[in-house]
Image (cartoon, rainbow, N blue to C red; front, side, top):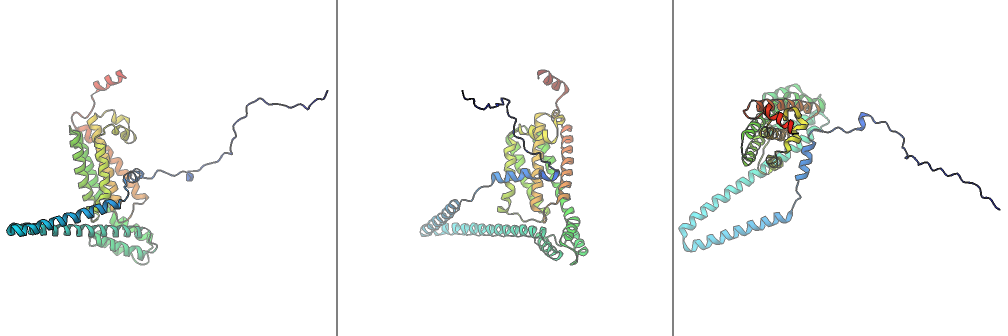
Length: 342
């Protein structure tokens, strides 16, 4: 009888394979940047270029012009007096359309130049380069004769570095402009909060938000001297459409408010007041986005902190204004009934 060597079988389950622990420091985490929501929304609503649509519009315009010319020619053959009136009207309308197109093209061209100047000034290595770009940008904006700009020019020179010139420009010029824009955003946000809260119709809410936000865009751009034509406003107007979609969805207010105001305040507000609060918050975010796109220099860390403090103050003031309105607060009796039902 031949005996085989014995084998030891371990029935114990094998534990999971563990990797070596790694220590993570604060530098390994990427903080959530302010404005990330706006960037995601902008990417979501960004549309691809459709050349076939542009060519279709061109051919449609050519066909309309040809049809108009043929119609005027036939009218001249039958009723010359009436044809003269229609010809003059067509010429005036055409001249007005060409003038409007030229103004839009010029405004869009100036806007692109100002965007390039903003990027160049932010990346300027020397003081001379930064000073030259900032002077050119403020001249195109029509703000080169302001007292703040004159004080800034008197305090900087060729011996300053690019960062020093930018810092002095932010301190002397941009702080004043930012304060004016912040007052506008604050006023429009508070007004939108109250108007939507007292409005009984969802359609009225949408009209109020669209009207106020379009005016806010123009006013903020005017503060920074930014030329905004029709096409140059498209980028900011897309944010208005986001607000319009929001106006009919009052349930989103709870999600937004829980992360900003807290359950204590929302638990005291009625449905209309909560909807007004959400509309005011989105109007304010639109105004801040318009500020970022209109400034001669991008916001730095210090300016973003100032914006965060202004946001907190605005939130408190909106809550106070809503509490002053009649019918905006849930009564204690109604609140206790809700708790018992739960």
